[in-house]
Image (cartoon, helix red, strand yellow):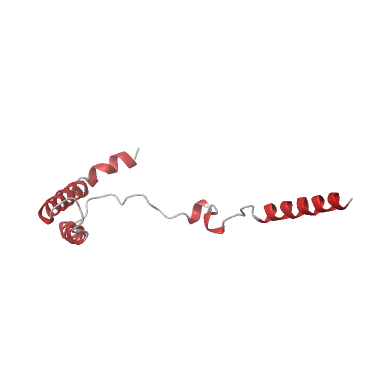
Length: 105
């Protein structure tokens, strides 16, 4: 009888501990209603040349600032890669007015 009561108490303890360890609903991962979701669609139309120049200078400076001595590239190689990336972004920005046809269908 004594052994049976200990086994029952141990079982009850293990069940209660496992119930407490169950994950609950994470309030940060709750699904937002559709009206509250942010609009992530790209703005259509081509930005002005001043905006493009400002953005490209910012992107280039930011990219150059990310270089580190421990990378596999020299600073010169990194700068050339940064310029290539910025040029492709500018090319994409200038061609955005062609995207209007895609979104109007």
